[in-house]
Length: 65
Image 1: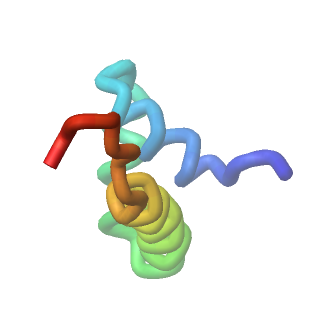
Image 2: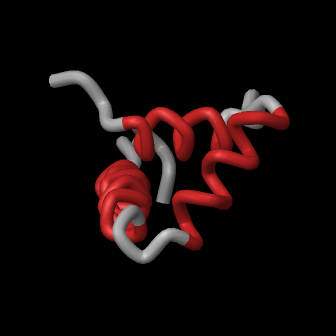
């Protein structure tokens, strides 16, 4: 599944690889009522992924207590 433009821009923002033009596009999308849900969904996907990654218990090594 191809990520939406909102997901693409959010991912570039998170990776600190967003160009000036892309930042302008992202900010315009966030401020556009008809586009806000797409950005909200993209952020929800990202935060859900973070929660999933951080909720996994780290493996214990022998001798660690």
